[in-house]
Structure formats: C-alpha cells, structure tokens
Length: 268
Ligand code: G3P
Ligand code: CA
Image (cartoon, rainbow, N blue to C red):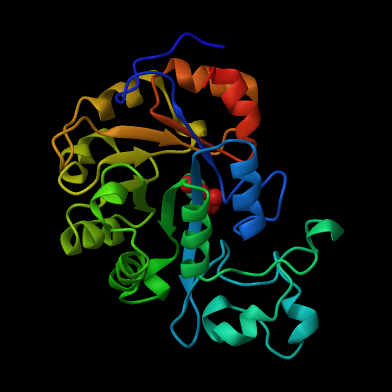
C-alpha cells in the first residue's frame, strides 16, 4: 500500500464501485450493487437515462444491445435506443445473461429500485446523468426521484450523494436546482476553465489516462461551491500499480470495476 497522499478529504482515496462491482457482476444491475456491498465497498457509481414513457432507468449505453437481449426480444426495433422503449418493455429484458449464466434474469433497474438497493446496504451513491442532451429536464426529474426516495435529506446530502455528468451544463443545472447537492464534472477541463467550474461543481473527475500530479494539485487549489477544496475522483482504474500511482497524485477517490483490488492497493 502507498502512504496516504494529500487527498483533499484527508487519508486514502475513496474506492467507488464503477457501475457497481462490474468486473464481477453485470454492470448497473442490483446484483452489481449487492456484489459491491458483499466486498464491503461503501460507494457505488451508476448511469441514469430515460425511457420513452419518462421513467428513469440505470443503464450506461444509449442503446440496449450490449447489456441486454433486446435484439432477440424486439427484433424489429433497431437501433434499440433506451429512449425508444417504454419502462415496461425494458423491464422484460434480461440484463444479466450477457455477463454470465449465473446472472440470467437480472433486470435493468429503475433509478428508484437502484437507490433503494444502495440504501438497503447503507452505501453511498455517485450518480451520473448520462447523455443529458437526449433527455431534456432529466436533472429536475432525477432530483425529484432522489427526493421521493429520501436521498435529499440532511444525512444523504452531507456525504452520501454526488451527482456528476460529462455535461457541465447538466451539472450546473443540478447545482442551480438544488444547491445543497454535491456535484462533479466528468472529464479533464483545461486549467483555465477551473475557476468557472468551481462555481457549481465540487469535483472534477478525469480519466486516469489524462491525469498528472500537477493537474490534481491545480484542481484541489480551488474552493468549490460549498467552501471546500475541489476534489478529484479518477476512473476507471482496475490494476494495483495504476491505483497506487494515482493515489500518489493525491486523488480523493478512485472509480473502479475491481474495488477489492484497488482497496488492497491503496490500503483503504
Ligand atoms: O464515473 C466515471 C465513469 O463512469 C465515466 O465513464 O463511460 O464509464 O460512464 P463511463
Ligand atoms: Ca458512468
């Protein structure tokens, strides 16, 4: 294990299970949340999109082909976009067999189902609003579901919820709608843009491939909208050597498909 770097939160980086513990169970399913919990992992990341009839569902790609049997079940419905199917249609899909027979019958969860499973395990959630340009108003709707399910109370806001997106506009919208929610911008914005981002984002969350010690330090030198240093969560790190390297840069968290491997590597 590395000696703890100077992560803004102090101590070793958080370990965040990417799409659940998605090296070991099908991504973005309740089984992947359960797997992370079974490994003792406190943080889970997911991806939120919207169905044709307006339900928020947890799935990464903008179409259903890679992670479900949608082509078999609905052969005439190419290109099988999430936004072209109703929630009831998606609920019929098998989102586990592609990963392995042990997971046959796993479903694409609704956001409501997903957060309730995270809650049941007393875990914390890094929620990504995916492809918001396809889903006008998804920020308000996501906050509504979170609020309905009890995720916008003081205890959740104080340290159990982060909302992030590659779309800075989407992150800004979340911040404006509900300033108490902790937020993150995905990607590696130029350092010159950081003063603007620090107005509405608490985190800058880059790929480890574009990360340097200097960049991490530059981000952490800014103060975010809640009066604390901006944080850096990096993705998607699945090997011990890379985890130790980025921990040495002082990142605040590591998003990983193999949270057990990363935890072991960074001594968390
Ligand atoms: O949370 C970071 C990471 O999930 C961003 O990339 O494509 O896996 O959503 P992606
Ligand atoms: Ca994601």
